[in-house]
Image 1 (spheres, helix red, strand yellow):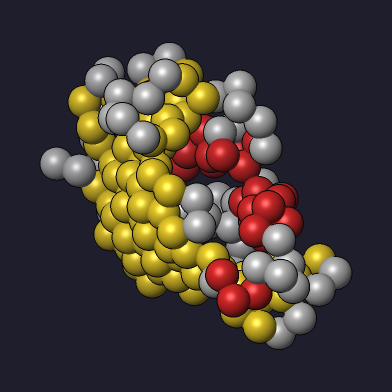
Image 2: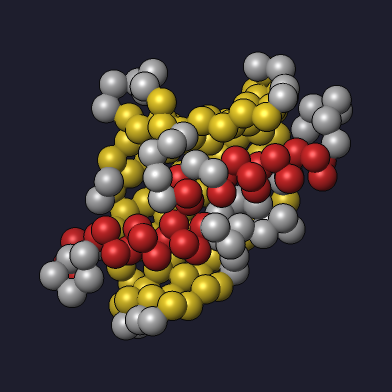
Length: 160
């Protein structure tokens, strides 16, 4: 972590950035993507800037980067998919709607994805994390009526 900004200030920013981009369920944070075929979301406060670039929908990959004074200080990469065999049981858009609601519950103690667990109706979200802000990895899963319908692996940490 850049020694110019304090870790708690960084975490507060990261939580706000994540709540105001993908989890916001709108396109207000979308910008013209730099990379062809990608979706790009951005959020900025003072010297801190957050960018999330991802590709795909059913199967997807992406990267989040936080900059301080336009120098990268932290990043997270992720890859995941929804399971097509359950598409007739639960529509993919319903999975992502539940995911976005869950991601609004991001915790300051683990500001990577959603909380460790969340339930709503027939949906259940589980998030397992190892490590901390400088070096972490995790996996999140969504179950619908007890069947795995979505999985995402992520990892990242400090950029020096």
